[in-house]
Image 1: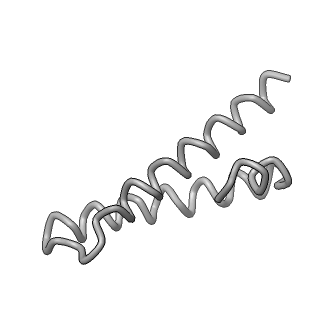
Image 2: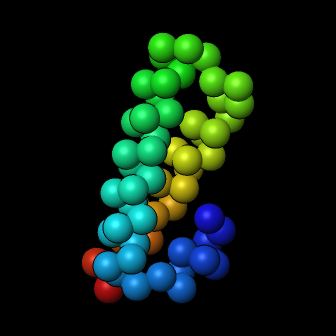
Length: 63
């Protein structure tokens, strides 16, 4: 997700997406430990998106 897409989401949508992607990240990491993924860069992409969502949530809570 791009930063622009994240800014358009509501707080509830951000929280749902954050939880969903956090779980996906954990699943990808576990799958990669068992058998290497065909594209391990997926893990980095999801991790960075999770961080973007967390940053946006924190910014909105501080306002």
